[in-house]
Length: 517
Image 1 (cartoon, helix red, strand yellow):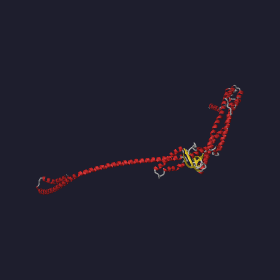
Image 2: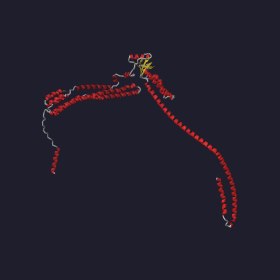
Image 3: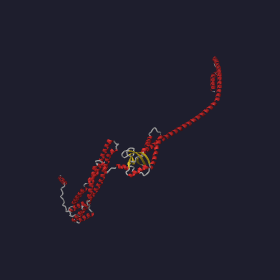
Image 4: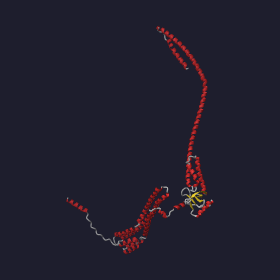
């Protein structure tokens, strides 16, 4: 269709000028020759155009036939191609569906793998936690085993403890070894409840090793050597071999021997679990205990003895001091009110003690002024106060000095301990025990001396103060009665001459100067 339009356009352009030339009128004769030539040229052009048109028409027909044939070919091939395209689209959709299914499967598998990895990590953590618990159980289980049983379970415990750090074992093998130890501990409990017998080695008290039979019941084990010469309880002292402590009574020895030989019988049980033997071994006498304190113990005991003697003396002295009775004080005041000096002196002698001495001095000077009587009685009270408080400060000094002496012993003991550490190191505990004992024992006895001394000082001071308080009470009652009924009326006093005041002279001088002015 596009080709036909193109040919028609070319034809129009070719014949257009000729048609215009035919329509124009011939107005001038001079142009006739040119017109004829132009007409001839136009005719030639038209002939050429016709021929071109014919060629073009032939070409157009050929192109049209070719187009029709091409359309028929296309029409013949488009249906199979359409069907093939549909099949390929179906195949594409199937492939896409399969690809989507595969992607979903891959995503699901990845999710499963992630979950499995997480589950594996959790299981590994749980396995590590369980392995740690089992290892902790084995570490705590080993010290609980009796020293006599350690020979039976030593190898298995060593393998189980080292299993967690053994790279050649799988996790299953490690768990098997550790769980085997747990099962062994459970079986051991069953055996210990009913009692079990096994052979092993032990060390005698003298240090000789011997072989024999152990009987374990609960936490207690007894041993009998093969020859029957060594029988006693198995305890741990030094090393990994049990030490045999002989029984203190022959009856317990015979009972244990019969039990081990026959496999049944009475069991000699030690309720202290071997602590009685250990306490008896380390128990010291009082003299040995004091000697461990070192040379500082001597001044501590000297102060303790001196403070005790002084306290006993002062207690006896203060106890036998006679205190004034209220009845006698009342009689004394009544005699003073009657101005009967002899009767008042007799009552004062009956009162006795430091209070009686003070009142006797007051009655002797009862005719003197009241101020003088007070001074005389106060002098007596001061003398008594000095006498009853004498030697009490010595007890207080002992109470304060004894802890300081204990502290001195502590310092010297620590110094000796550091000397031993310098010489022997920290591994020898026996060499360090002397300095530590000196450091602690001196402080202990220093406090033992100081605390009772302080209490005794407070008690005796209170007792001495009670004596002085009774003297003050009786003296005040006597002075008050003397003030109410004096034996002698006070004489009137003449007024004393007053000295001139220097300020008055200055005022007189100023007055004279003013008058002169």
